[in-house]
Image 1 (cartoon, rainbow, N blue to C red):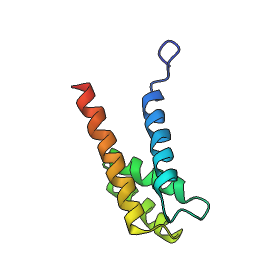
Image 2 (cartoon, rainbow, N blue to C red):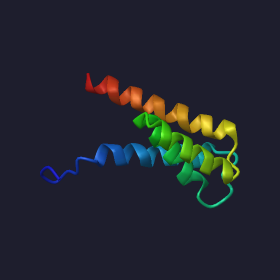
Image 3 (tube, rainbow, N blue to C red):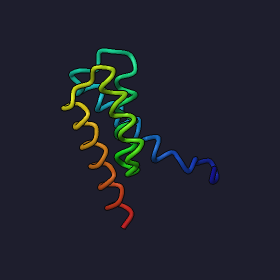
Length: 89
């Protein structure tokens, strides 16, 4: 913590926003854990962690998430990462 603010507050806010977008747009997220796995896919994409991305993509697919919904999570997360990077320059 720095003062009253957590160092992770911006990242948590972004993940919460990503979860909201995914929950709204996901067409194949009927099983429990689907949205959470797509958030993990998005976080892995934003962090550029290939092993994490592969693991969470496989888990999402095992839960019945469509390839299109996985792609939507990746695109949304990468767009957020670009906005964050542009704002820090």
